Image (cartoon, rainbow, N blue to C red; front, side):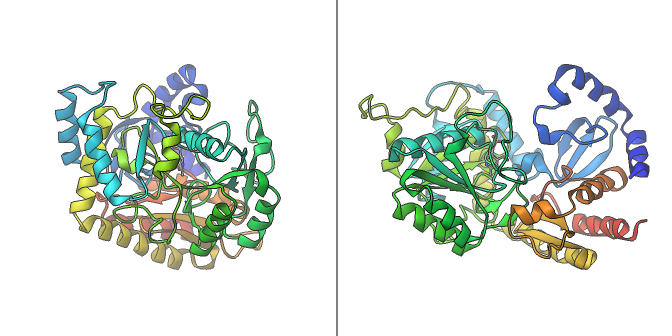
Length: 434
Ligand SMILES: Cc1ncc(COP(=O)(O)O)c(C=O)c1O
């Protein structure tokens, strides 16, 4: 590791200087805690296709892809053209615009549950409003989430993210007692926990694949079991598809899982990499926030905010989704790259690691503490996270491959078989200690 650090320091001298400036200006030098890694993160100069390039001209194959938002890769030429064209006609209207109607049209056709949509600027906001709506619609307070589930930094949901999932994640939170958490893929235990709050259960929020918590798919039976409990108890079932929406196919995962969520959250890909969050769902639920026909005493305010549905994001999202819809080869390509990578990583690591994920998403868990399979965040937390960090850092310092250390990787349309080969060769060197 110390050898990797000296290699990294040698080749990132401009980043070092600039990051010291950043440290003076910003909390911990970053604007999102997960963007920091030791000894200091490189500073990005530009990004194109599958590459992200730092201020020292190091060119990394990017598996982070802007928090997995760039399914077409960086600066895709078609999307760039449309963004530039839109920018020349104004990038911020603050009024109803045609660009939004076009994006919503394509979303509603692919996601039939989206009978009504409200745009926001981040996934965090979408999750915050979903919780508020669930509470308002049901008149109850308790929300169930999943251990390790990540829905952004909302005051409500900043709970049960890191092991042991029972301690407060941050100071400054209030009413934490109204958030309970469940072990992913353990339906029996989850239902036992839910039964203790069923009179006050406003909703359940769950990701189809635990993303930040370890790239772990939820089983169909588990999700269906949670949904059944939720509906049986007149609670709102919220599916957070901010990472999974339009990631594996043109649409959401809930259709394949035979689910009927009341509210679906979208983000990331649907803005084509520009800031976005979407809360959408059944008309009767979304309309609770309609100030046009609800009495003040009955309605619930959900926002949108200054930059919601800005035409630049709408255009970027519309053309990204249009490409995904019309170019069928995209999903085939990235899902195949993901499957191939999981298989080859499995072979390369043997019984030292478990590779989780689905389609174009993948993550490595180094086994220890008698863990032999990773099906929830507890298993993931007992794996060797330090080794994962060291592995990712070795790829950055020696092999010009970038994963945000410790996080899942993703493929984009800009990647190719060559990148799989490069990753596996680098991984083999890591395993061999060379
Ligand atoms: C599943 C999920 N929900 C919500 C969020 C929050 O979205 P944002 O970072 O846009 O606020 C994220 C972010 O990674 C996420 O992965």
